Each structure stands twice: as structure tokens, then as C-alpha cells.
Image (tube, helix red, strand yellow):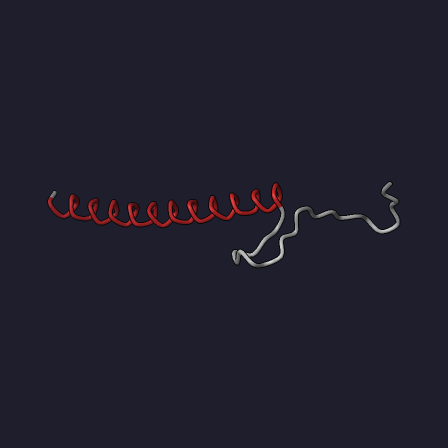
Amino acid sequence: MKTIVFQMAGILAGHQQEIAKLISELELNGKRSDRLLDIIEHGFARDDDNAPRMESVSFHAPGVSVD
């Protein structure tokens, strides 16, 4: 019985490590998503305050007239 408890504790520890890793990945992906949304909403700018800012970005398909 003692052996089974130790095995279960080891399995649980492994699962806890995997969960912690997945949480870290989710947090990183959330930060990346927030950054992408910020770029979409406000345009791209470098972190350098002196860098030129692009206030808007537009994309046009070839052969399509935009008036």
C-alpha cells in the first residue's frame, strides 16, 4: 500500500509540473495576443520612444481599386 501511495504522489507531482508548464505557456500566449491586438488597434511602434510610429496600416489586394 505504501508503494502505491508513493507512486501516486510521483504521478501527481509530474502532473503538477506539466500543469505549471501549460499555465506559463498560456500566460505567454496571452501576452502575445495582447500585443497583437494593441498593434491592430493602434498601429506598430517600436518600444523606442524616438522611433517613428505607424498610426495605421492598410492592405490592398492586387487589382482591387480602393476609393
